[in-house]
Image 1: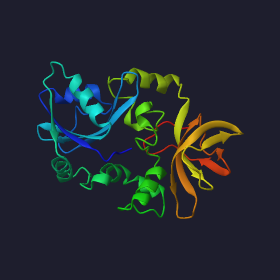
Image 2: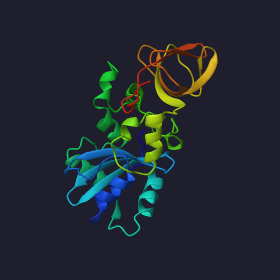
Image 3: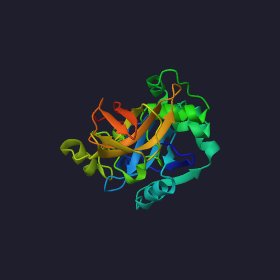
Image 4: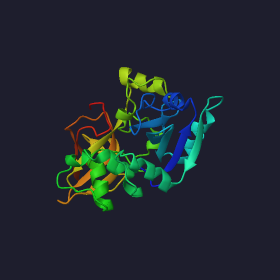
Length: 266
């Protein structure tokens, strides 16, 4: 889900932790120095506005906006009101350098920061794939882990539970914007579509219709070619079931289990 246009902020002030705790889906109030947190900023209707990584650095908290860019910056600044909180922009070298020095698992390789930090464990889900600086291999491992791309999977228009990001909106984290919507979906249900990982028997185009017993139930949003010539893909499907077989044109599409950041079983 990462974007190449990261924005780095330094958050300061006596109420910085409380403020970030109220705004984001991750808990930051009790972070220890050099610890990181990974969460989302949501709208009040539960739509995903952006993705952030947070790192405690002395008396300040570093915020790396991985997706959402200026929308996230504007929202964070808008609701400060009278709180003792301030944000300062950092250049890329300073921000990434601080994170790397802190041993957070981030890297200064701009195109792989989020990928390497998040997918160290996920690459094992794709045997034979070595994550290096090859974009195709990186993309394949991302799909193998079921992690959505911000643009391809239209994350900004969706509820995070729909977009396979349930682990970033845990049920036990306090009162952030959109929390009531997320809680209702978790406990009452109502998710009509889910992001799924797909194993395709033959290559298909992005946008291809996915069908169940001849009826359309979704579409393919991302694909990556595997060494054996088959494709891994992501797509949105109505009420998916792990192990079911859909079709995409002439290709068979096997629905795999939830992705790395999806904590709701199919």
